[in-house]
Image 1 (cartoon, one colour):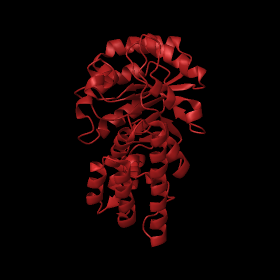
Image 2: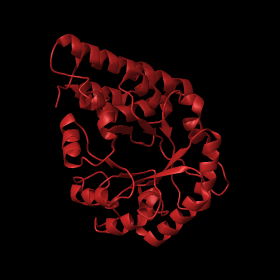
Image 3: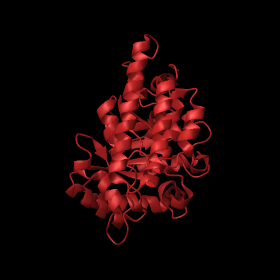
Image 4: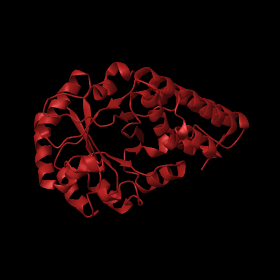
Length: 323
């Protein structure tokens, strides 16, 4: 089984990836937050910085592309090839309204005929290995049958299935029955993505779907960066207090690497604070009794206030026990 880090816009950029890769059990692949090429044949500076090889040393990174124009996709794959990337991922899963309103991300799933033409063009013209991250459809999981017929016509490197429809966003439980049908009918390796927050969650997926080749971890890792170690049996939270202390020290080092990384590349305290507060919306779940401290983190308007609140949280709060 292989493990991938999901692309989470605004969070899992190269600052986060480097910190995670250095401190915790490394992923087999890391997927970048999406790049959105346009007709001007350019990438935003922020997007380019995120995928530059020198900003991702030793990290097996797969750039993700968001577009519904095959010409832009092919251009992007050639640009990425110049940077050394041989595999790219097509985003057909983003449920954001600003994305889907333009027929991109999960919004592209509403136009299966157009998607079929798009895939025909990119597979006949691009030299890259192409994987796809998809949802089940827009409103009804029954839409997935037609989508699988389309996907199976093309030589996908891999199909990453998030078994929710677009209208679910991240609510409701993943539709495992629909995922099962997709996993069985797929002509390429399949990766599961969705609601793996504990070791038990992973075991249930692995047991039910022994044919899958990989799982993608997203919010579960953001909430508990040691999740992959627990899944792999390399981290046992029950046991000595020393072990718990070691875990908290590693988590502090992880935080500090991200914090100093953002201070280095962001302009002004406000922007750094915004990025760190966004991280704590997930990371705060790792601590017991930390609500008071997390409120102080959220209210911090200066880096000094933020540092004091974070320092107190790490000093006085304990990690949540093993699930």
